[in-house]
Amino acid sequence: MDLKDTYRYLVGAYYGIRDMDNYELKEYILKDIEEYIKSFIKDNPITDFDYRKEADLVNDEKSLKTKLQDSLIVLPKVNAPMELVLLVKARLKEIRENEIN
Image (cartoon, rainbow, N blue to C red; front, side, top):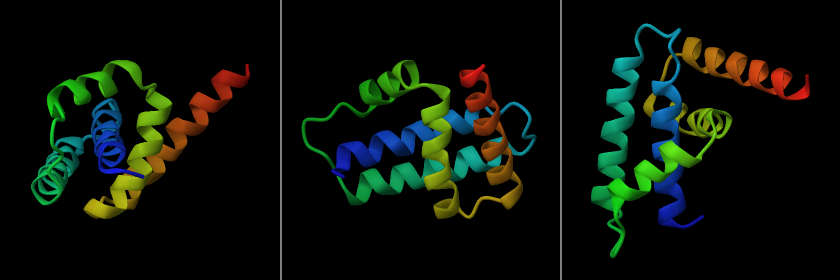
């Protein structure tokens, strides 16, 4: 996985958690993910890469399912509460069930 792909899944995780309306403390986790993304960019600058444009593309083009899957990778890195991980997994299960039916 290259740096661009890593950035995209980090941003996908951010937008996935942002769409978790049933989690009251999401603003704290979003802040943690945002700081993690900033740190990633600082430590791994990508030349000739429009971060804002890529973030907008991720938000517009990735499905909620994919964003939530991305969040399952990122949440442990920001020490998110297990409650949120379980909520994400439940939401993914719901999405999968709706796809089948």
